[in-house]
Image (cartoon, rainbow, N blue to C red; front, side, top):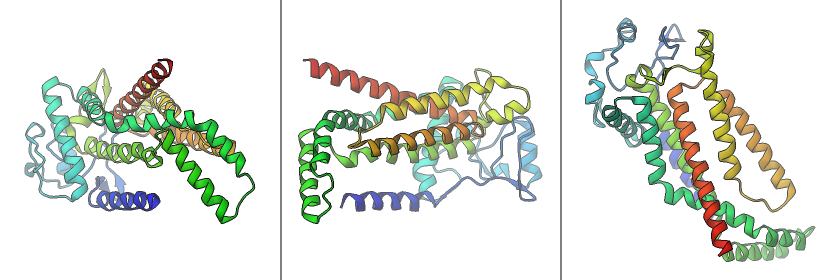
Length: 310
């Protein structure tokens, strides 16, 4: 039943996500790039760019910018209906980035503030995932004994008895197996919504933050000799590693533990490699979102430790 629930939620999310996406501007099937930042431009931008080079590129490709609102005047209802995904996720995030950016006068800072604000609002939910990790560690000795008790037994009666005893251990330790999916179900759509909103907002890919161009990827920056951008892949790697490490759930046996460790290492390597081609804006989101997760899990661990001492 629980597996069916996860599948239903996943299917609904995929169906929603397919109703809208970023459209890369192309010339003879090749992505069109801003010569100043190296960023691939999109044809379905949400508002008018202000950079003259960017404006000229869009005009050359017959994009009618006059139909678009100025970014500071952009609203969720602007540009008409583009599907559930864009309406429910992308446009609200884009609007909030603009509102905060106008207040603080910097859109890089706006991305950071909005990231932390959303994670703060979701804290009661994501905290449960962190709590599950700690509860699983507490229950691990009993789960290990259970595994040894039924080792080598594969008949249906033994498997049913093992499952019942396992659920009792989960209940004693306040463990909900489904809550471990919460983190992914929240993190994944948020990441893609931010990714699309940042790619489609000219105020982001034309903006600088602490001297770093938000629309430029580290790989593009390296080609121009700006090696300081290496700090972003390093921070992405560190934030991902510690976020995964602190969010790791105890396993019942060494085989499962090794599988989880392998998956974690592969994920970290993949995300780090991908960060070289991500824009600085989306990397800011990833770093601070995972930074919040690290802080959250450390806080949960500390409270759990203090509760056990008392």
